[in-house]
Length: 422
Image (cartoon, rainbow, N blue to C red):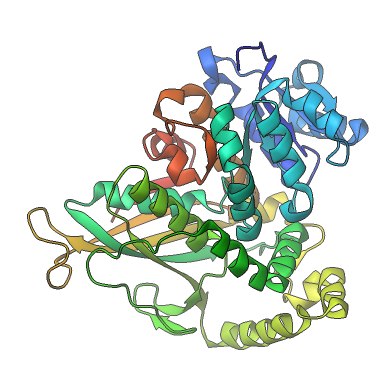
């Protein structure tokens, strides 16, 4: 890392649907960079599109100077040389090119080879775990941090578990999280890049099982009472609505973090269960119907093509090719409630039932395109400003493993992703 690098951050895939909002967030927080001055650039395949995104950010933030100040680099995942030229110029690359199973690896590989840290916002466990399997040792040798899932997947959940553990007096042994998302009067939806990631993820779920075997992990020790798994659909008294197990990447990410904290830092691991509120009975019929269709179609290539062609139809308008409007984003928000159990100081975690509880809340703005850029950019700023508090060696890490000893929670609190004890 001795070589001079002109940029602290390069946003790669800046003209994609999520990338454009990451650009705005970087521009908004540039004064929080090292010595109060963040040097940054945008990169992607198409110079014209990138110019448009910078122009759009300049307009949205009333910062016309961005148009002349922000450099534009052309790089393409299918051209490794162009990626190398880009990576050599940055301390950190923010990788915004999903679905990551198709476009993510060349960026990680180039970052590792060129001594550049990489942060992404993937919610695809198969990609995240494959990167860890294939690049962890090389990244460690190079002193490079490759940190996936730094968006809404999975910073609120991963840091929420760590925050809850840190606030608990004694030994926290298990946590359940309950996610609810609400849309305002304008409604809300999610861009279909995320929908595509889900389709390919489910189609490939057995590959993920065989990938996990390759790590040869010993089972994590269970401290305290074993967490009970809830049913596929149950009424949550906490939420006062029906809930189902959360299908996203949070459980996979949290488990990897707990493994790191236990094996590398000998901290007591926390068991975790993740659930999401789905509302009342009418929603359940929709959900069951959509779910059955999805699980049936995703198994066949003709079915996957249908799902990819008509996201709005098959998701009852939840996913769309256009993504949400700014108005819809302003009205949307999320809430994660964490219910933790454990043993007070002085009582033995392995004797009897947990004797103490804690409730915490992580809440924030619209998950996909407001909270995700905030989380990603704060992860990058934390990495730049608090390098002494990161893991001792480089590697492929979860957000929790990377940032457990930093002030990222305080930083997120200042930017509208709020952590509190209830």
